[in-house]
Each structure stands twice: as C-alpha cells, then as structure tokens.
Image (cartoon, rainbow, N blue to C red; front, side, top):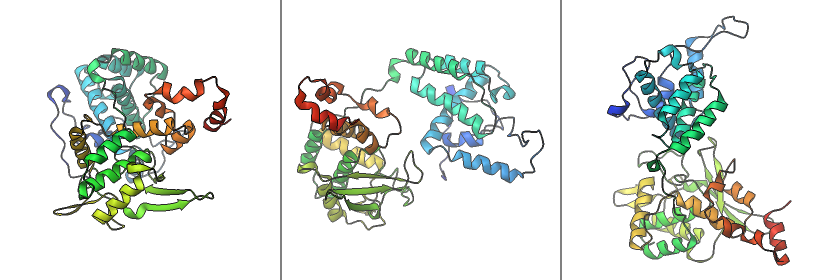
Length: 383
C-alpha cells in the first residue's frame, strides 16, 4: 500500500525497545519491515547455495506481502507489536523470537489471556505465524496446544471486549429510512441507492463506498461503468455489479440484485441517484453532487448520513455491518435455500451462519408436521 501517512507515537504501555530490526512504521508495514535476526535460507534441499541476487530474494518478500489484504496486514502488525513488547519484557533474545518456539508463543498467548478478546488473540497468533512465513523462517509451533490455549483465552476474555450484537437491517427499516430521506437531494439520493444496493446484493460493508475522498481508484472501486443488465432464459432480469477488487478476490467479483416491489426497490433508487447526481461511467458508482463538485461516497459520509436519519426516525444507532446481517436474514426468511444465500453472499465457509439471529423463524417451515410444506422443503433443501 502506497501512503504518505506517518506512524503515530507508540502508546506508553506498548512501546518496544529501540531496535534496528524494528523501525517505527505504520502497523500494516510491520510484517515486511520488521525483520528477524535470521534471514531466509538460500540453500537448496541438498545444502548447496542457490545463486540468487539480493534483489531476487527481496522480490519474494514483496510478492508474499501482497497475499494479505491491507486490513489483515494492519491487524497482524498490531499483534506483532504486542508480541515484541512481551518479548522485551521477558528479555527474550532476538534469535529466540524468530523462529519462535512453542513454549514462547504459548506463554505469549497465556499472558494476553484475559486482556484481549478471543478474536483479537487469534489474529495476533496468526500474525506471528505470517511474519515467520513471510521471512522464510520455519514455523514449528504445536498447533494442537495453540488451539487449546486460544480456546481457553476466549473463556477468559473480558466482557468489555465483546461488542454488542449488531441489529440487522430489515425491509421495514429501509422503508422507515426512505420516509425520512429527501431523495431529491444529491447525498440522500446516493446514500439510499447505496443502501438498497448493498442490502439486496448482500454486500460487505465498504464494497460500494470509498475509504476517503482521495482514495478512489478505478482498479479497486466500483464505477458506473461496472454495471450491466442480464436476462436469463426465463426472462428474469438481473442487474450485475462488477467489484474490481474485494476482500477475498484481488481479481474482483460480481454481485447482483433483481427489482423489488415497493419503495425499497434498488432499481428505482439507483435510477433516481443517476438522475440526481449524473456521474459519468468512469466515476465512482455512488458519487454525489457537493457544492464544491462531484464527491465520491465515502464510508464515513454514508454511515454519518444513516445515523442522522435513523436518529430522526427513531430507529436508534445503526451499524453498517447490520446491512449484510439483515439482507442475509431477509433472503433466508423468504425461503431462499441456504446454499443459494451462501453463494450470493460469497462466503467460502459457513461463516454466514453466525449472522442468523432468528434461527427458529428461518427453520419454522422445516419443523412443521403438515405435508403441505413438503414442496417447499424440496425446493429449499434439494437433495
């Protein structure tokens, strides 16, 4: 990631001892710039030196570093800082920090237990592992013992580390927000179009917004030109959005929705937005007309607008991640098969099950003893 940002000063409680091996840098750069005292071996399997230049070896580091998304690198970098502060406090020599022994890593996890959430410690553990792999050094930590330690740490996690469950967005909530928004104004038109598109495509938070006004990149962010319309063999219309790059796919993914009935129709919202804001095909999809010119819809502007209108409509404090939770529930409650929703949400695992807040309602059709529901069961859960 190319950036001119400067690293913030360390917190007093998380300040590592000065070391030429660990320059003060941004968190997402630590995996690459914080180097172990040992270096990647240039020997082949028979112990012979492979005639590679420093440039060849450095290129390996650069390429592997791109295997992690920026947010992941930042989380891993935070864990790496905590690990080295722990090692400093125990006078662990550099040669024992990498490659790290099982006893050192387990001791680190145990020391952190009760201070961090289980999810945070998972990230720290895999951050240390990624640091080893990135620099070509062996990772020999006993995975079985590490897993047990991480499980134990989850039980000891402080209550303050658990975030309250995010309330899911619903169609009724979309309608309430619609009645509060003024869709003739540029920002509200863009926000409602973004909201309905994000909801009905089961998009991840941030996939249709831009991090900041200066961060728009056509190679990363969806533009007006990334929309296309398709019709299947039965005449069903689908609007497809190509996301140039996503959290799980550097080459991009397609998401899609179909026209919905009523005021939550994403097609009507998108059409209104394009009419009010008139962005070009090369502009960010949900760009809006500010008094100073066309602005991309940033993540913060989107959430701020939602917060303002939700407060006015008495909906409470809404969280952006609740959009994906709510759309998942909406499709499941409509009887859309689990595997179909999983595909729509682009989950590679069963992680989406964690979002299901109304299991009893979703499973209700399968719990009945009336044979009239058999056709629905065959459709929703095909063999």
